[in-house]
Image (tube, rainbow, N blue to C red; front, side):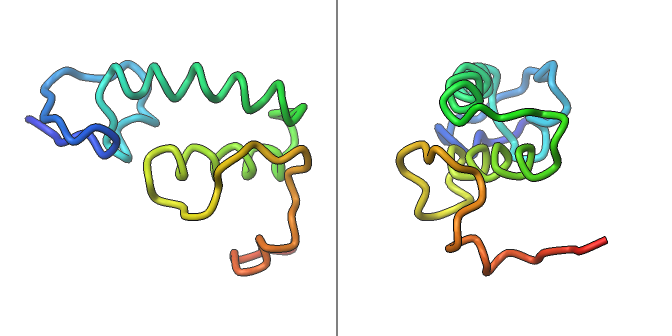
Length: 92
């Protein structure tokens, strides 16, 4: 089943190893590009993947990378920014 990569727009048939890539969908090369960039983001922002809000911050960059989130350009140093108030916050 061929899919169109959200990032580069090319049609691809290959199965991407990471099931997370399926949801965009992202082709292998764009997903590899993202995973490389993700490491940079995590290092720059000192993200701790055991913290939900840090995972959420990374997911935001992931979505921005694939063009689903607007307005994220440069890496911010702190994950929780006031502008993020328009997101749905679930308090447990």
